[in-house]
Image (cartoon, rainbow, N blue to C red; front, top):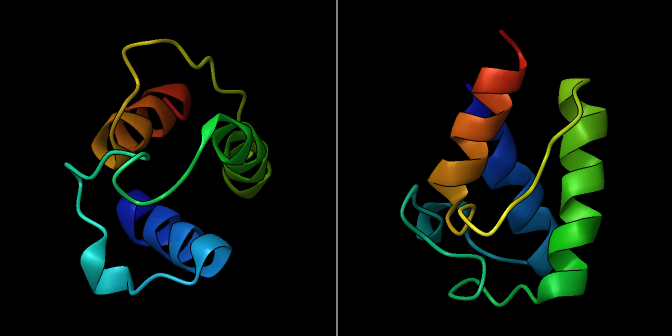
Length: 73
């Protein structure tokens, strides 16, 4: 569920095909720069009603899914 929502947000933000977005996709692979990533974090926080602490260990879509799922517990 979390992954599907994130995939939709990412696809809309960069006009990507949702099927091209995988859990192991990095933001760089998808064409997102650091400013895009900051903007996306704010969108994710609003969409999921949580606060996310980004760190250097968060590099893939799967990392963000895990971060959101942990924050919702």
